[in-house]
Amino acid sequence: MPSSAPLQVSALLLSQEHLQGAYWRMRLRSPEVCRLASPGQFVQLRLPALEGHILRRPFSICDVEDGETLTLVYKVVGAGTDSMTRLAPGASLDLLAPLGHGFSRPAPGRPLVLLGGGYGCAAMLFTARRRREEGADAPLVLLGARSQGDILLEREFRSLGCPVEISTDDGSLGLQGRITLLLETALRKAPDAFLQACGPMPMLKAVSQMAAQAPQAQCEVSLDERMCCGVGACFGCVVKARDASSPEGWRYLRSCKEGPVFPAEDLLW
Image (cartoon, rainbow, N blue to C red):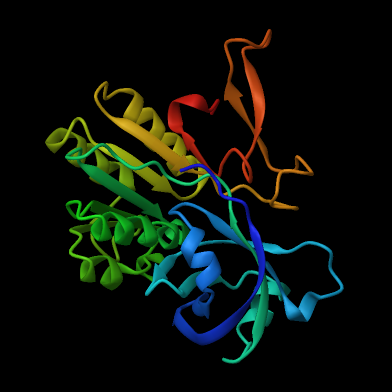
């Protein structure tokens, strides 16, 4: 979906929850952002512990509930995200949101398959919820990760009525192997599926290549590129995309502005 004009708002922190391992979930009250947000978009959060830093931190919108509750899932990877774990309910957080170009709405009746790889699982829950709210059939959800500890939100997907299939590299949960093994089976059953995926770049490349070999399938991918400004000004998150009108046959697109969701066939992998 096209991006809407972002807002700068103060969101009330409602709750913090340790999910597992390095993963946490926070819920914020922000009816203004929830009203405008579309699946696949993200927020830029100013971290109170890093107020001396110019740049905000980007986080995918994990979920929107009740028209006012915004959910973010984050992984502790450094000082910034570590500081987030110590924020207490009642804190006011400065958000710039919603940002970016989100997922498209599949044609009525077309099978939808959502693929989440590792931390990318968190970016797909809002998509599933929105489809259910629109009265569409529950999408098939494929979750893949290195191990069981990196599989996120399985219960939440199932609570929406979504069938969930899981693969892990080490076999600690579900099928042992890559998520593409699950996708191969899914495409045999529904060759005209609309695929929407978020995860590490090698996974997205493999999913895109499989989709390209299935003529009836359509595929969109949400890129997890490092972002600086988040609003398209700095060109620090560009990716190469096909462009027949360019002498080189390609051009740069900004992940934060033209993305983070792109048609898979448009990207040069």
